[in-house]
Image (cartoon, rainbow, N blue to C red; front, side):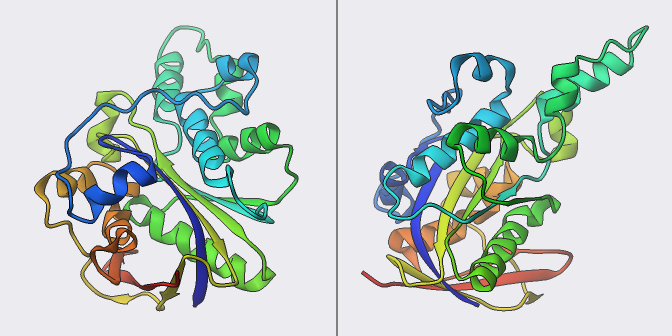
Length: 258
């Protein structure tokens, strides 16, 4: 599958924004861990922001950044998250373990996996369709495949939002989410600054990061498995293999168009 990549948004510890992260990912500067600020998307009204969670706000903020100067709005969106909203999962489990099971209606409403898609539609006023996927460590690759397929089927731009916000420590051992990490890719059928060629998933070993700090980050969040691809986009290579299901890998070859 051949698609274009128009814009990138990135928010992660020590990688706060694509332009700031590019020299680090290219190996021109050392990565240094820096706490990620809590997300505050301006497109959500203040009252709505108060009722939502960090995971929802994280996804909406990524969309804001990816679409800030986009020439065309996406005709569809794909949301990819390995664990959904860990804070809500933790809170609901606590409530269910208490007498009377005092589950918050707002939290129950926000607990569905596609809640960020609904809030993004409210924030942007868009009626574009969306898909929400989850596939463990393969969540980013699954989201990329879903988005690329939609681009080619619809011959129109698609926004991929991939994110997992770190929740309570007691869930991290099971979820594998020890750090927050999110990125957005605005994909298109026509060439952009980058061209991506995706091969069908095949048995292959996923790429790792040579830098110890970035490799630690890659292992600290399922969505951060995208880091080898981001390094290539920053100029550090042209082929990345991402982890997919089981022993399969998703090979992505890229070329900078301009």
